Image 1 (cartoon, rainbow, N blue to C red):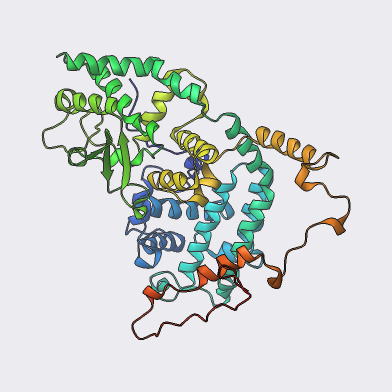
Image 2 (cartoon, helix red, strand yellow):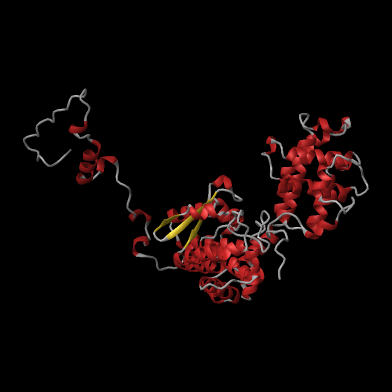
Length: 465
């Protein structure tokens, strides 16, 4: 049986597994213990603990604990990489302040040991650290800085240029990743195949048996729960809202045109508003069976979370997405080898880009809790093969000798020139005057209505000069 407690790691998460073993300090304490202990070993340790506390301040938007730990851990890795035996942060000032660039950034880019997003994440951490070190409001609790360390203030604004260097060095890698993701993109046929795959059939069978009165085994419960947890398939939402969805959220969900819409307040992009989780009528039927007949057998009576681990506890923060990926792996389809939940979002975003109207795209983007810019950058994977073929057809048409009738013209002097204001057709000018003249009935009471002059004797009453 699979371990459900392992921490969920999205493919784009900046940290590498290879960094986990790089720990010069005693390995029998956790990262959180290292950054929160009051038994500080040296000035470097004191700077790092101060940085960890600084990250949770309002000035840094009061970061979540996981984000604070990630930045503090990455800064610790940088320091230990540049100067493994050092006990201070003086190594950062070496090479005229370019120590991180020369001794870590360039070797990392040349070796290709980290992806571009990971490298940029480390540089962002370094920028935050220097902001903390050079800010007299916050660095008072740290060790005394040497007067020459004003160099940190000079390096700080240059880090933006370092990030540009990462982009230029890794552009080919990013293009290659785009190509791989485009080739591996989920197809409508593969999405349909999911409903005939082994884990889907097993989960559906377990739910229907529970509806008939069977008490499910633990493995059958997991199959039923995981099947329902992938309903993010229907609208491309992130799995994180499922981590926090409660029975109350489900009970207060409203129905529109047969679709039940559940709103979850807490999720990864909470600032975009509540997460919108949509359920079809068939999914509603399965959820009712799960809530009424399956979940009570495995959940404590006091627990309010909708989806629970095999131990009957809420999933640890950010880990329920692992169940979605485990489901895909069990399908034994092509998508199970390369694609995670994020690929469902790419599938939905790409098809929306290809077939939806701009107004419809805005609706989908709101439900997926991202902007149009984010959709274009991170999720849309348009087929470059189709794009290239379309471009070839267009080029052949516009460069051929035979053009559409309206575009043929061998003599530029024969082209129609726009009419001047004095050459406007009478019918057109009549329309302009009619549209620009106010309706007498709509004039304010304080404005006198003009009296139209009588027509000339030799002039028709239906013509306006």
